[in-house]
Length: 184
Image (cartoon, rainbow, N blue to C red; front, side, top):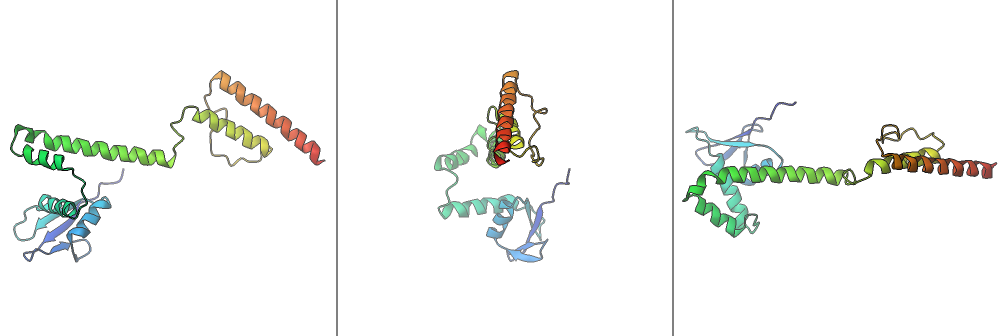
């Protein structure tokens, strides 16, 4: 497995300018938001004191987006967050939020996988794939060996499905024989 990428180190100078140590140039909050959207972790350190300012700057990025009308956090959630700082719920809120975002990321990954191949979870998908292969082989006279699906032998279809597949193969072979005779 590949080694996890180190966070992008951003140094804040006394002038409050933010310096990207990888590219040796100054960056803005929007640049940092872009790095995060691309999947990079960032760490923002005060150059003089060495304090970690990451949380402060990430909150500032969220506040700027919210103030521009890019409302991701409903008012009730913001209210509950403020309330959690003054109640016993403070101890469970960080874990709850972390778990919620983990579930969201996992759900997005699964949705993306499903979008890339939407039929995989469909009942009968493997049987249909085997039928398509049999049809293709029969129509090409067995010359279409480029099929990437499973061979009928590899597909574990119930007996009824296998009989149906065999019948389709037989019918296609008959059609192919008739077509061959017509072309003579």
